[in-house]
Amino acid sequence: MSKLQALIFDVDGTLADTERDGHRVAFNQAFREAGLDWNWTVELYGELLQVTGGKERIRLYIEKYLKNFEMDEDISEFAARLHKRKTHFYLQLLQSGAIPLRPGVERLINEARHAGLRLAIATTTTPANVTYLLSATLGEASLNWFEVIAAGDIVPAKKPAADIYNWALEQMKLEPAACLAFEDSLNGIKSALAANLKTLITVNDYTKEDDFSGALLVLDQYGEADAPFKVLQGDAGGYDYVTVDMLKMLHQRDD
Image (cartoon, rainbow, N blue to C red; front, top):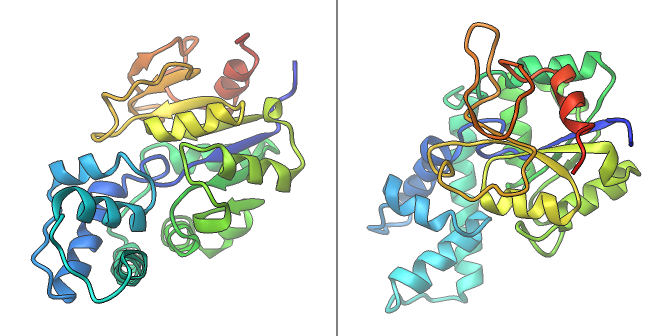
């Protein structure tokens, strides 16, 4: 049995609840600026989350809901240009401190660092989104805590493909058996499992009904000593909040 050496985190929905009150809001700001009468409601955005990547969601929206929408440029160029402005507005939200980390995240990351575990990120969001979130919530020094930040278009196929996790593992020169992945969505766990990574899930409002078959454990949050998590699937081994000792216990469980 391999010893646990590294934790690999997804970002959106995993480290912070960024989707509903972050990315969605920024998309709508970009639409208004562009003179578009589009409005992605909470419910509609949940449907668009079936694909990973902001440019991909714009394309899905046009192809599924606006079949007669006319553009003066290629759809890929149009989506990329619109997404760039969305990223601008999203970064403004991050800088303002409007998007905090999920409960227990900061404590767990600090505990993992002190325990000597290696840290990495594997996400489909852009590198800038990761940088601004970490800087705004954990301070600029936190960018050096993560050995690898695998983000955005660094690999050709986004989640649920395993590419982003495989790339991170290659950079760290680690086997999947030495790591744990942290995810929040169906596409996320599909990606992690395809990379042969044992995975812990913390759900959010958009993903609580997803099928997390194959997860080590499914929780509503990471929890704190005075605010325990709720176990939705699996056995937490008597723990009330996620700790490094708990993660080591989960990692040693037989498949």
